[in-house]
Length: 85
Image 1 (cartoon, one colour):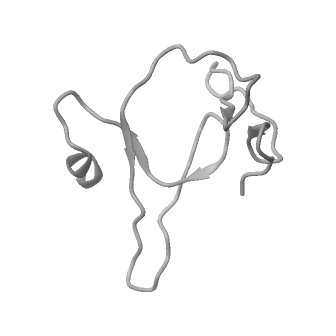
Image 2: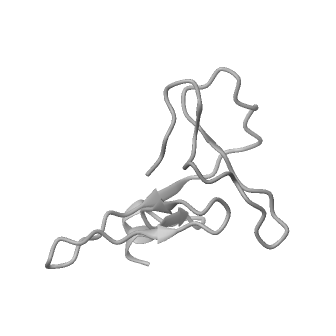
Image 3: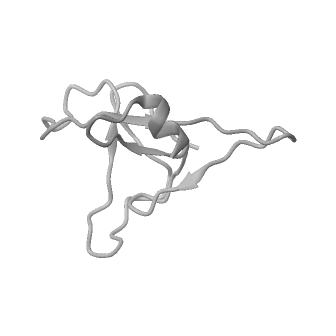
């Protein structure tokens, strides 16, 4: 579960760690002190439930958080197409 408040980085109580040589990621939400974005990429996430009501989550390798499955869209791909793949 994410912790933090408006104006602070959103991450779990586990500090970001290095995985496979990459620096852990910190997501910022409404933070005036957040670094300037280096670019934007369209993406999509999907909320998937089974018949019992369980929600599918994936665990990120860069910051160890549990998140909805998703990713970047390929060139020409729609959000609906991304959700099906």
